[in-house]
Length: 367
Image (tube, rainbow, N blue to C red; front, side, top):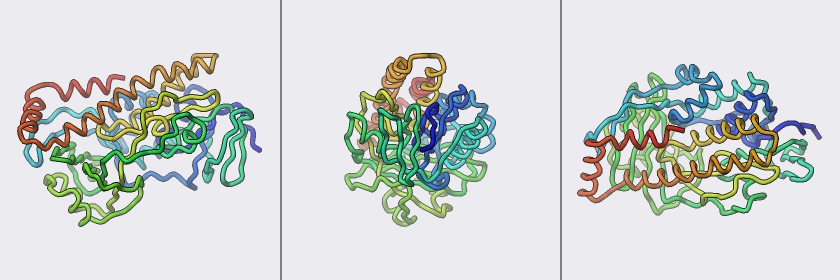
C-alpha cells in the first residue's frame, strides 16, 4: 500500500479534477489524481469558458495559453431560425475540451502534481482513509475529492443523495468542422436550439439541442452520421450548416441531470463538478462551475486550520451559486425553444431592444 496520507486523493482526471489539482498545488497543498483511463481522453467537443472561469485560470498564469490554444470570439449573434435578432459583444473563450484538459494537465505536472492512470475507483474506507482501485492498488490518503462525473461512484456509495442520473428531456448532437468565423451563433427555434462557436482560427464547434421524449444514452462517445443528425435537427442556419457539412465525426448524447444536492461533503470526502451538481448545459456553465469549485475549496483550505470549517464554508459558498445557475440554465432552455409565434416575437423584441442579454451575462459571470 502506497502512503499518500498527506495528500488529497482526487478521483477523476477531467476538468474538475485537474482544476482542483492545479489550485491545490498553487497553494502548496499536495494532491494525487487517480484517473481510470490509461491516458487523458477528452475529444470531439468544444467548451466555452466565461469570465468567471477565465479570471480564476488567470491566477494559474493560464490566460496566455487560452489565447494560444483557443479563441476569444468577437460577437454572439442570436437568430430566430435564420432571421437575425441581435448581437452582443462576446466575453467568452472557446476551446476544444482536449486542449483545455492538456493545458490543465501540463500545469498540474509543472506545479508538482502526481497523476496515476489506469486507476478505476472501487472503494474508500472513511475511517482508515484507504482507497482501493480495480488494478489491485491501494493508497492511504488524507482526504478524498470526488471528481468522477455525473455517474459518480463515490456519490452513489457514500452520500445521502443517491438518486441515479435521469434523462432531462433533451438530447444533443455535436461535431467540430471547418469554419473560420470569428463570431458565435445561437439559433433559437421551436423545440430546439443550435450553438456554433469558433475554437481556433479555422475550426468551429457545433452543438444542436433538441427537446424530445425519446431517451438517448448518456454517452459522450456514441457516434452517429450526418444524415441522422440532419433528420433530427431539421432547419439549420447557413452558419451552422457549413460546420456540419465539413465535419468528419458526429456524436449524439442524452443530457442527464441529478436532483440538486444539499450535501457536498462528509468528514472524509468532498464532491466537485458534475459529481456534485450536473446541470443542463444551456448557459455553458458546467465546466466553469467545476473550475469555481476547485478554486473556492483550495482557497478556503489554504487559509484555515479547521477542515470541518473549510467544508462548511465550501457548501455555503457553492450551493446558492449552483442553485442559481441550475435554475437559470433550465429557464434558458424554455426561452430558447419557444414555439408560439407571438411569444417568440415578444422574446425577440425584448432581446433586441433592451440590455437583458448583457444583464443576464453579468449575473452569471461576476463571480
